[in-house]
Image 1 (tube, helix red, strand yellow):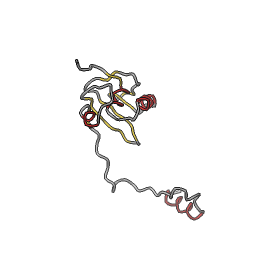
Image 2 (cartoon, helix red, strand yellow):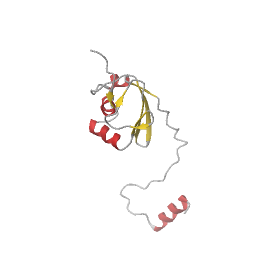
Image 3 (cartoon, one colour):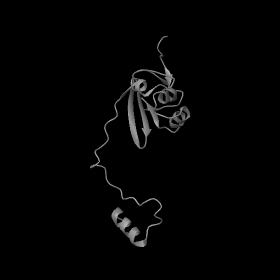
Image 4 (cartoon, helix red, strand yellow):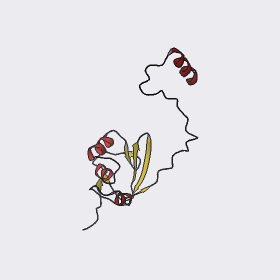
Length: 123
């Protein structure tokens, strides 16, 4: 069996477990959340070994270098061998600003709470 020379972006991203389903990978490509070598990727775009793939997920970019091409979904250990993760580590929790959050289901804020929120936001 000879190695693959190209693979579809959506198929590869699904195969290495970046997305739960192939249709989710295709939808992410259509929405512009997947970039190959800095350019927005269509789902059927060819992917080659050595390409840089950026996947936007939960507000953060995952930067992956393709080291092996696959088109079928594989186990997590095999999937980890198919790319080199170059994603920078997340910032420490101390640097991330804390955003005050209301408890879910607490209803609308009272007049006093709204004034406190507006003062905190600088309005």
